[in-house]
Amino acid sequence: MATDAQQACFEAGIKFGSLYHQFAGTPVSPSSIRSLETAMAEAIEKQPFCESVTVEIHGDRVADAIDHENDYTELTGSLMDVEMRIDYEGVRVRTRMTMTDGYPLMELVGVDEP
Amino acid sequence: MATDAQQACFEAGIKFGSLYHQFAGTPVSPSSIRSLETAMAEAIEKQPFCESVTVEIHGDRVADAIDHENDYTELTGSLMDVEMRIDYEGVRVRTRMTMTDGYPLMELVGVDEP
Amino acid sequence: MATDAQQACFEAGIKFGSLYHQFAGTPVSPSSIRSLETAMAEAIEKQPFCESVTVEIHGDRVADAIDHENDYTELTGSLMDVEMRIDYEGVRVRTRMTMTDGYPLMELVGVDEP
Amino acid sequence: MATDAQQACFEAGIKFGSLYHQFAGTPVSPSSIRSLETAMAEAIEKQPFCESVTVEIHGDRVADAIDHENDYTELTGSLMDVEMRIDYEGVRVRTRMTMTDGYPLMELVGVDEP
Image (cartoon, rainbow over all chains, first blue to last red; front, side, top):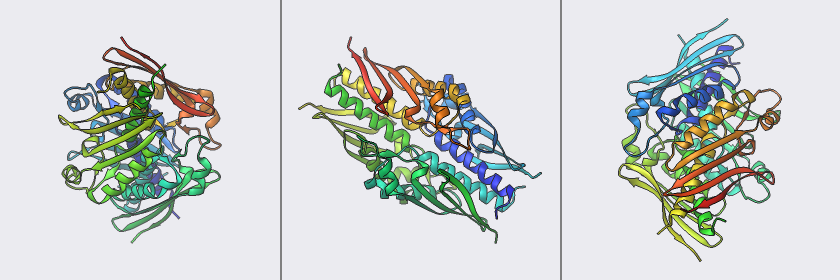
């Protein structure tokens, strides 16, 4: 019914939606960026068909987002770049989330069939 | 690069991951099932390319999951069925989440190209 | 050890943290405000010692927050006011979250001992 | 109006509700326990008046919760113990979440006024 490539893209989307809505809103400051990046990547890599996840939370953007009286902000898509690779039955899908025109955009970068 | 059908499946996956990880853990009891189903469906339907979302939280499963001293439980995938339709550039994707062998399974039901 | 009034305030805080971190990030547009307000209030009211929850998501703020190409935004503390009443062993606690100096502030409004 | 001790207990509750509803549902396996514990503690420690947070996710409980075909489970309160210390205007509050009668219970352990 669905092709392996379509299934692979579906799985890639699940991981992106999961990562975003599980972790958006988490308190973050420059000193906690590393632990949050690691935990996000390791959590989503557990999900089926997920080969690798790289999360980069930008320290300068976090610093800019921190308000006047607290020393933290909340994680949003605009503070990070994410790259992910999915392998479903040999189809490899590469995806990323980056800032595009001021908004975080989730996109398919490549779909490589065997 | 990616086909419209693959993009459509990617978008479908994003919605499923979003719905699950946004709302899993929400306190729910038999009397709040309707409002939670409605809010979940209306929230995810806002996302791009999402045509319709149907959420059915099963009252009997919620009642069974409620513990001895509280009168609520937390929403998990095993308490609900979800159906979703995506339309991306004319490609229509149908997806669902149902209990299969005791676990909630997200799956592509159909990919209809124009 | 802890007084009933202190316990009541602890319970009030739990509900506020729960409400915020469960629902922040939910997609919302002017047309889905009502269902989200209702689901949030009914979900948190299920928690122990919670008498009532009122959530008001401001349509004008949601409209202002919506970006140029999508028709929704993500729920944040700055879009809503929340009021909550807790009753723990006869101690009634009133709490609210409102915008103060540009930031959402959770605060105790009153602690009434029997 | 509210005493410093009551405010301190309110703040303690906010942190507990935040921790629980931000991170419940996160995919976790024995190999990702450490990174998740660290990220949870560091995130919540950023919040106002929070002195320290210790999160212990039990590897044996995670292993028992993992299902037959995946190699991960979702974080729930029953898999972890949490201890937290709050300091509000000199009032120190100690709190913990532990399994009690089969359910995770959040509780005040001590309220020490200066």
